[in-house]
Image (cartoon, rainbow, N blue to C red; front, side, top):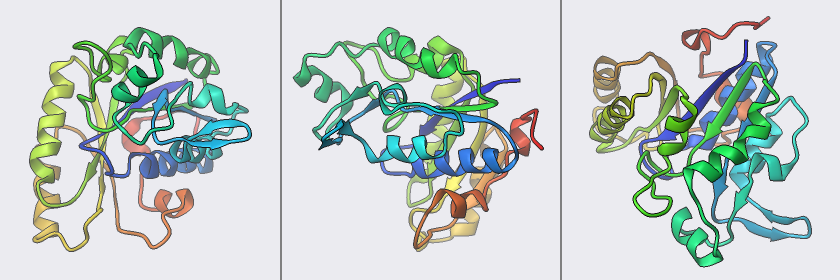
Length: 231
């Protein structure tokens, strides 16, 4: 059975792509077919093949199904700024409807395990009063929340979980990505998150010198997601 999840973060630079690539790698190792899409990305580099985003390339590398770059990252913008500003400057109408249509080619592949990665936190703006959270709402996707563990992360995580629930979506699981290993009372903070977040923890990822998908996958578990078809 094909399962699709939306990857959200408690903020920007909390390691959404690092964790997403690790989850995809773990799924591949478990014998599942994988696919991913990062519908909108800013901060892309110009290459002879066109604009390319490092995060989207990292996801593409962990897709077992053959996908081209434009399918994985349909909306790519060069400036490293908020996506809605980059889109406005490029004259592109960035709406949840447009993003939902753009991800359909990936969803249609019906991989065993598919991830749709957001940008920034849960309420990143698109256009007008619409936010990126409207995309998983429109698609009805369960959410995996990446918590960047550092000072202030508990409030950010709980507020994100509340917003996800308010939008009518299920929080399928969360991952503690320890972006600041010097966080005071680290274990106590992790225990508090585990107690208060209404979903299972899929893993605690330490600060790694080289956070490759393979190294990250070691610290993750897919069992709480109830994926079928794994060997």
